[in-house]
Image 1 (cartoon, helix red, strand yellow):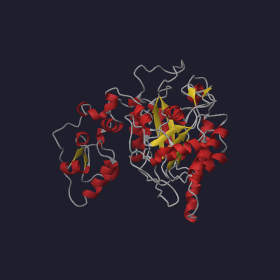
Image 2: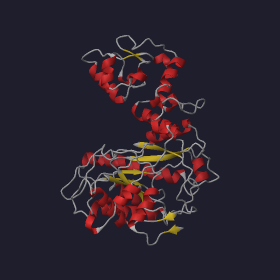
Image 3: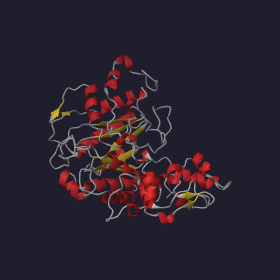
Image 4: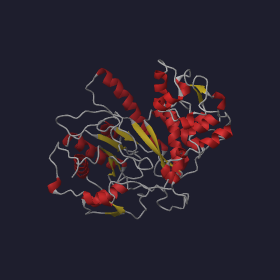
Length: 450
């Protein structure tokens, strides 16, 4: 274990921010909290994730590991105990200093903190708790905090931490228990699902307590999420999405994240990926996940055992519509909100606007364009006052060929072969950031630039 005993803070930051890049954190905070006279920072529900990398990962949080030292030997992890990488570990006070100074410089709005397992799950979880306690109680940091809980840690530690953070997450790691046993024998589905259930039950109980006692501390108010690695094991899309649907139904998760597998270790147990990370597959899973959460689809409508994988050329909603042309065309001025949600090119916000707008006037295709409907997709599936936009055929091959001409079906960065994980500490940023005494800013003061 190549742990750096005398590493300076900037070098630790470089090591542990880079080590955290495979933890997905592309979510808005989901929680509103006003600033106070005695604290620093605030949190607004959509306000944390202002900037995203090309593959959807958020860069507006200070995203770091507490340590990349780990006693576990997960085959897919760059930081497992057998890999020869430079190791480092923060102290609780160092993370507090970094968070406060980055916030005062307007670089971040919150903290995303994960960790390798140092010594034991309890030891690591206690260090995380000490860190968050200092941030909230000593430094009075009122911004957004997302913490990755450590499976196998004492439930009391997880509960105490949950009263200080906005969101907690526990990585499911891999879609099935068999894959977990094969690639991460130190972990088990039981040790992952047990704290997930604890957090879910406590969130439910806390909501009931808040209805009676308004001053009750809030427990994980932005909910919990999880992450699955996609492409390291042979599960198909149907299996992956079925697991996600079950998690939403049984654990009331806010988000399931899908992380395209990157073979960082060259482990012979893992698949070779000559084409790079399966980013297009990850993209399709996110699109389908959106359909589950906002469009009232079920996995069984999108995939089946006979058809277990998504069409890589079309988004899942277009693909579903092509296979169910018997439901189309839909009359915009009469269709229910639920029916509108199923039309390609109509989002849930556009569907709401359509329902409201048609109470006053009959809508035309020009009206739909102003509302935000993507007509280049929707025009094959809708009518306005009984007429289609153009003289088109309601025929699968004809519509499919036209939809595939829409370049937005595949994101530009994936289409052009680009893949880069953004970091706070690219060379330009590193040159700009030095924690010297002259740059320390008085508490409560924020500046736009250095």
